[in-house]
Amino acid sequence: MDFPVFKTKIEGKDQKFNLTDAKERRDYFLAKAGEEIEKLKSYVKDNTFIVYLLGKKNSGKGTYSKMLAELLGPGSLEHFSVGDMIRAVSRDIQDPAKKLELELYLGKNYRGWTPPDDLIAAIEGRDTKTLLPTELILALVKREIAKRPRKTLFIDGFPRDMDQVSYSLFFRDLVGFRDDADVMAFIDVPTAVIEERIKYRRICPICNTSRNTKLFPTAQIGYDEKSEEFYLICDNPDCSGCGRQKMVGKEGDDLGIEPIRERLETDQKLMEKAMTLYGLPKIFLRNSVPVETAKDYVDDYELTMAYDYEWDAATRKINIIEKPWVVNDDQGVPSYSLQAPAVAVSLIKQLVKALGI
Image (cartoon, rainbow, N blue to C red; front, top):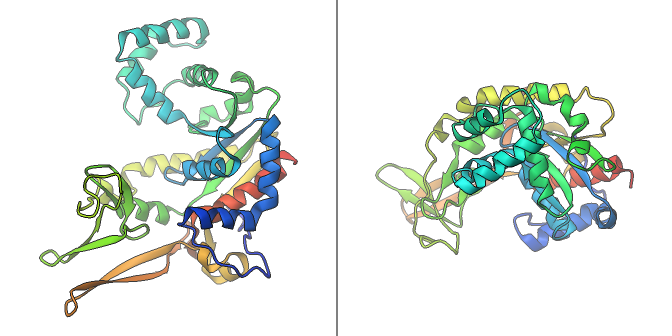
């Protein structure tokens, strides 16, 4: 798939922003897409719409949705994860009363070839690799959306397999959004980016805060002279281990993408299939920009930084080395990875065009 490079650079605007700072990030969005943000704010006052987020696992679907929600204001839109919904249902049916409630709901609303009792059993004994019948997913999504105030939805996890692609054409009708606009947003992230996000991920064992030694370090770095290992120290102010707790790798993260390679390949095929659909406007979000042409499309501060560390034995201090993160994209082209706000600007501008506002 050939995703176009989106230009966020505005000629004549030389102001730089620290995109890790909440206030400066907001100023950045207003500088880069202020007019489009105001159009969307006005639109969502009287309208709702659906965006189907299609991208590989760990491609940032939730991150981009949350950034847009922050800009448009409380209650404007919701990132609706089908996977999170299924996990919540699986927990709920441990309660006999809630299990009975679900059985009654499916008895009235489910239409399919698998008996409802078998579906309940499948949810209870499900592993994350086993896909539930599409007819059940649709019934559960309809149930969950009906519980909530009406708002714009960013759907994450549907369609999930090839058989569900055609259902997406009628999804808005099924969940009561018949007259609303719907858009497909495709997210392209190089496999190398996903690999390093996983391999260098670190978790605080106390508060579960997630960081990355290479891409998103904490304020304080530690060094073990015996093992010659650098490590992150939790800096979550709400954590009892803040400032002293060593963050650790999650089990299996050292394997990188291997445990999810099959899933990534399925996600790729799913996007390729969905791109052939007619009748839905499409948005293309690209996480990377070729090194050779980057200066024409983005500002330097929009690039993701990579961090390396050196131990100075003389001063007994850690030197932190920061430089733009370069990876090979899936076509083998050396590319910079973009910070999430730059991709969100692309989302905002394309969304305004797709909605015709």
